[in-house]
Image (cartoon, rainbow, N blue to C red; front, side, top):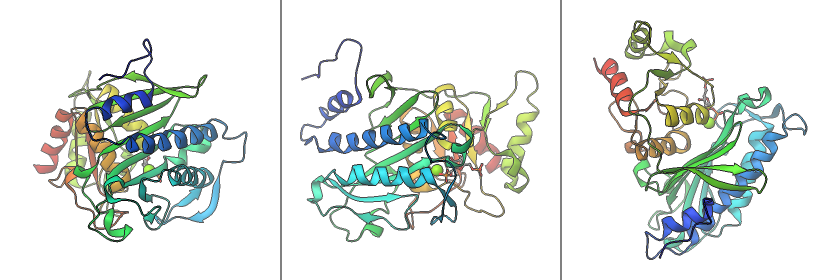
Length: 333
Ligand code: AHM
Ligand code: MG
């Protein structure tokens, strides 16, 4: 049975229901969970759009587990996700960039229990200057055989059942995968609903564009330095560079237009800055579903990396398959 589509308009919840039809025993609980995420992101988006008009600029005054000063909007976004997911009885555990430890939300039947991990407001240092920010999320099953939130979340990215992000840019877009392609929805602000705008997205295999904070280049391993030097020699028609400094925005551009994003190790931060569980894993799942690649530059796919704790960091090379291979040739050679 196929869900009827209303003319040309497909809402996010219709799309999820269509996806669920692939799983004959699906209980509908999963779409209920995802609707909690879309509700939260619509609320976060409304704060982002009014930043400056309401009191959400600046710092909260606390330092989070990452050692970073929390922005007011980091705290609001985190609380909003926690609250909306708290009403979803099938969310057993949540873990956030802003919280010290994963938390048990509900003790639920093992078969129906999920773990949701998120970066509530990625790129939040950009909020005060009106540059795009985002929310990143990933969903795992809550394994019944493991006790304790801290242990249950330690799963490799290959176990993700869904992942995505919302980018609060000129328009608000939601991109997600349940392991059956990558799909984009755009929030129609008139009706407050996400509508399908790109289905089965494919990342270009190759584009002459790279995205990296090049100010740190002198502190990158030699292979990255050689790659970046080589891009300068490509001459006319050669490489271009784009770096927003919000991972979601930089990744979204590459998903749509191609290229490669790098966050290498530095001398001060040997594992780079980005977090494996709720930044790199979800984007890696999306990249691979869209025909791209995501690796740590040390011989592993991102999704194969086994976390040792929820806030683990990893270097990241992500983008079109041929772009990533090109970078790896410099790292390996
Ligand atoms: P955040 O989640 O605390 O905002 O930090 C992650 C952000 C990414 O969005 C972005 O790609 C990166 O930090 C930028 O870091 P840098 O300023 O070192 O280039
Ligand atoms: Mg982030």
